[in-house]
Length: 114
Image (cartoon, rainbow, N blue to C red):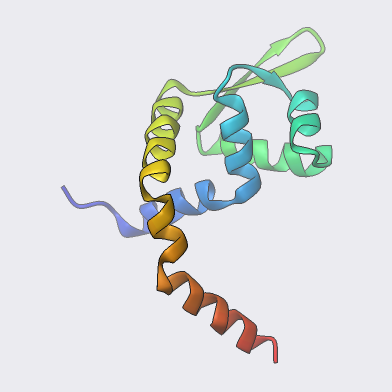
């Protein structure tokens, strides 16, 4: 089965943002309010809310009202996906840090600022 490359690019772009990935990893332990996420990530509420909106629109998370607060949680599929990703990150972490392709990209980034 072939994957739509454009869809795959968007999928990994959504997950590739460091702050959004931190939010997802924080939610792996269960439901959280925006305030709990803000405090844990030490980010301002506007940025966290923006990232949560993206994660909601992509259906990685869901929310429900609890009194005055909204509780955010992972969709069950997202939780399974994150568990698998985390398992593979542990397996490939050393290889990823040694991969020359990422270092070359950093070189090009530095050259473009000259």
